[in-house]
Structures are given as C-alpha cells and as structure tokens.
Length: 443
Ligand code: B12
Ligand code: SF4
Ligand code: SF4
Image (cartoon, rainbow, N blue to C red):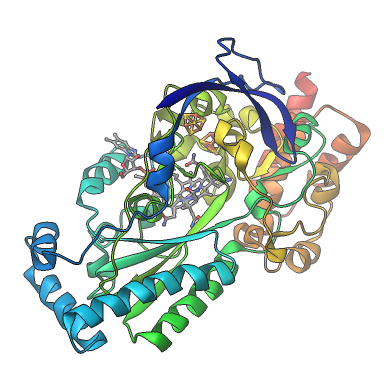
C-alpha cells in the first residue's frame, strides 16, 4: 500500500534543510538562499520498510550452487570459502551458525564503536567497471591520476587484497553542531568550510575504529583482512550500496532514508564468507534538486559528476590555479562544497554526529575569510593539525581564501586582507590575489 507524500523545503537549521511533509500537496515550494525548492513525491512503502530489517540473504541451502552462480568463473574463491568454513567450525552447519552469530556481533560491535550501520557486501563489482571506465575516458577525474592507476584492483577487491570474498562496509554520520550552513553561504564575508571538514580528519577517526572492529572479529574468528577509508583503490560507494547501507543519489553519493547522506564510509576487506546483505530500494524518484543546485553544473547528468567542475575538487584536489571562469562560482566555499547535499530532501533526516572528534574546531564554522587569510603558516600548521584541511597545505588554503575574498562584498577588512598578500612569496597566491583585487576594481 502506498501513500503519496510531498516533501518541500522551507527552513534550514544547522546546515540542513527542514522539510515539511504534507499529504497530497501538489505545490512546489521555493527554497531559501538561492536554492531551488524541491518536491519529492516519496513513496512510503510498508513493504520497503519491512525489507530494511532482516535483509541477509539466506545462505543455508544450496550454498555451493549460490557461490558457483555468483563467482562462476572463479572456482578458487569457492574453494577457499569452503575451506574457511571448515576452519571456523567442525561441521558445515556449526560453521554457518558460528558465522551467523558473528555477523550479529559485528553489528553490535560496530554500533559500540560509533558506526551508524555495518553491513556486508560480496565482491562482485563487475557491473561498475564500465561506468568507471567511461568516467575516466571522459576525463572527469581531472588531475586525480590515482583514480585510473590501479587497473582492475578498484573493481576487483580480491586483486587488491588476495582471498577477499566479503567487504564489511560501515558508515558514520559526521554532521557537527555548527553555525547554520545556509546563513554562512549567504554571508559572503565568511568562509564556508564543508561540514565534513569542520572537525578532526575522518580518515584517522574511521580507520582507527575499523581497525578495532577488525581486531574484535579476529579475536572471535581469525581472518585475513585489511581496513580502508578513502585510502586505496576501493569503490566505497558501490560497495556500500551493494551492502544496503543506502542507495546512490543522483549526486552520486550514498543516501539512507533515516540519516540522509552526511556520513563517511569505510571498509574491512575480509576472507570470512559472511552472509551478504541486500541492497535497498532507491528513493530519488523524479527529484533533481541536486543537479539544479550545483553552483558549477558539475553533476552533468544523474549519477555523473565531472570532478573538474566540482568545487570539492577545485578547492581540495586541484594543485595549480583555479580556472578563472569558475572562480566566481565558488562564492565563499573555501574547502569542499555541500550544496548538492544541502538541497537533498533526505538530509532532513541528517542527524548530528555524536562523535566528539567531528565537533567544530577553531571556530571554522563562522570564521571570516579575512581573519583566516591573516593566519601565518605556523598558525595554519598548528591549528589545522589533525584536520583534513591540513592536507591541502597552506598555499592552496590561501589560494582558496583569495578567491572567496574576490567574491566578497568590498570592505576595509576584505581589501586590507587582499592587499596584505599582494606581494606574497607564492606565485599561486599572488595570482589569485591579483584576480580578486581586479574583481573589486571591476565593481
Ligand atoms: C574521487 C572522489 C571524489 C571526487 C569525484 C567525485 C565522484 N562523484 O566521483 C571529488 C573530489 C569531486 C569528490 C567530491 C566529494 N566527495 Co568524494 N570521493 C571520491 C572517492 C575517492 C572515489 C569516488 C569514485 O570512485 N569516483 C569514480 C566514479 C566513476 O564513481 P561514481 O561517481 O561512484 O560513478 C559510478 C556511476 O555513477 C557511474 N558513472 C559515473 N560517471 C559516469 C559517466 C559515464 C559516461 C557513465 C556511463 C557512467 C558513469 O559509474 C560509476 C560506477 O558505477 C571516494 C572514496 C572511494 N575510495 O570510493 C570519495 C567519496 C565518494 N567522497 C565522499 C564525499 C563526502 C565527498 C563530498 C561530499 C565532499 C565535500 N563535501 O566536498 C564531495 C561530493 C561531490 C559529489 N557530488 O560527488 C564520500 C561519500 C560518502 C557518501 N555518503 O556517499 C566518499 C565515499 C569518501 C568516504 N570515505 O566517505 N570526491
Ligand atoms: S559538491 Fe558542490 S560543486 Fe560538487 S557536485 Fe555537489 S554541489 Fe556541485
Ligand atoms: S540525491 Fe538529488 S535527486 Fe536524489 S533525492 Fe537527493 S537531491 Fe533529489
């Protein structure tokens, strides 16, 4: 049975929109802050909800057949999985019972370690290979050479870590209790730092937790494993989607009905033949708010992001000068970008992170561009230590801030900050300062 509801934006609190849910309301509401309103006919489906609970595919009967079908061309994997089963329990049934109990414990331990959900995927990513290749061939990766460097290791987990037959995929919400995201975006004198980077570097946080989870599993059932967080040729969103941690939104990120998309992903590659979880249904429907809201048009089609246009790439990954035609579109976004997520109706459900490590540091949620631009290199190194922002380095940080200052309303503090770095020792910074000052002259 379906009931049709309409979701519309009307307010933004703590960086995410509040959406009113109205029964049978056909009108599309306009959004605030320049974002278009989105109206998503969301199907509340009792069956879908029931589906989300116990989704483990039964592996008890016809196990070899299921494995053969899944890994038909890789008999070695089947044999290794059978061997592993024998090593876990004396008989097949007891081995399966032990694995089922372990699977349950993995969720409990994951929750104790601060993960919102932990689920299991198989390693068959063959259907993602063509998409990855097409993305690379289109040049969408820009300077991120590492995206094309590892041959098929990215789509074939067992080539990256031999004997891997399952991926334990985990997600952790990061939304911190911070100053309002939209107000910040509207106030051109302030720096907008992506919500995920306001606190401690997530790589460190998730990696340590995943390591603990893997160790707990090993203490119960010895296994060969490796943990990853955005650190190796791993298709994190694909794997998490297959494990049922959410569905892929049209902005290409994973979304979960109950928490939205503001979470990180991490994985444990393991040789334990755990039962795999089922994917969940997608719920984007006819919505295209993220495509329309993207300031640079980087989401060139649903599920396709041209990284070269994405502000996240331009402010974090790109090493050299930010292309002049794109500079105005950056506004005051100096590290990453959240626009496609801020407009997503499902982020109505985004939860504040309970993780102390993701709490805002150094007042980055409301700092002005000018005050950050005055930081010395020593200030940057000291204050950004342990933050993801540290990775871009002082020079690129100043480059980004200069662009923000060029887009700000002219004021004594904005022009003073830019003037103070007219003779900066970095050519990259000088180039962006000159551009910023010329923008103000133009006005
Ligand atoms: C490279 C990368 C980027 C790049 C490129 C983004 C992208 N969409 O590819 C840049 C720097 C732009 C980026 C930005 C961001 N990222 Co990023 N990024 C990654 C990384 C390292 C790899 C992603 C990847 O594999 N891209 C390759 C493309 C091909 O994959 P895909 O987009 O999933 O595309 C699939 C299909 O859509 C299709 N397809 C795509 N394009 C095309 C084109 C054609 C022609 C065809 C036929 C098919 C096709 O094929 C693919 C396979 O099925 C992952 C970590 C990891 N190791 O997985 C994090 C990751 C995806 N990023 C993450 C985050 C948080 C972000 C930002 C929100 C950060 C920010 N606030 O600034 C933004 C969001 C921008 C966006 N809308 O994508 C999180 C996402 C968490 C989640 N909820 O899903 C991840 C998982 C990191 C993590 N560990 O948490 N990111
Ligand atoms: S992160 Fe920003 S620039 Fe990148 S796709 Fe999303 S809205 Fe566009
Ligand atoms: S991901 Fe994009 S299309 Fe899907 S619901 Fe969110 S805003 Fe709409």
